[in-house]
Amino acid sequence: MACPFFMPVEKLENGAWLHPHRLPLGCGWSGHCGAPGHEGESPSQEELRDFCNLGYAESCGRLPQERPWDSVRFTARSVFDAENGRGQRVQLRYVCERRHRPAEHGFLEFDVAQDQWVKYHDNASVQKMAECFLAAYFDKRKREMEPVAS
Image 1 (cartoon, rainbow, N blue to C red):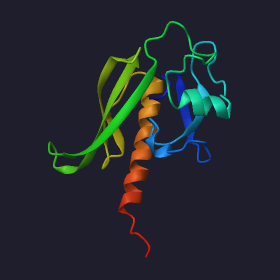
Image 2: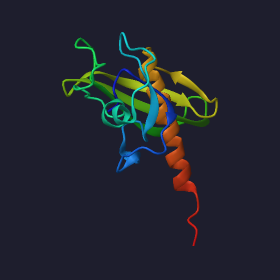
Image 3: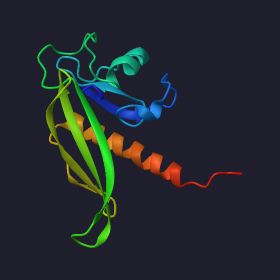
């Protein structure tokens, strides 16, 4: 679950996470804050590790008291596009949580053959997180397909 105000920009390869592939966006990300009054501020490495990439950042000084969500999480699955008989699509399910309960949820969809979003989120931060999650999802699938060296 990433912070709903986090705007990820670049994969953070040298993060201090024990299991980076288990992070809410599929890996660690650097980026900037989008919280009101803090737009564009760059979090420290500790803030990225403890708050931005994980959500539920109650002790983050940038987190507004009044907010619609505490965190955002994603999951993905590949589906064949039977409607037009071409390529595959990736369907992302998202859940925005407030106080550890779903506050909003739905599906986003990416057409792999057309390399474009078919259904996207209206919130720029959530959409950017979805794009980052999808990039990590594709990277993971690519690694799984690579032959193992003997």
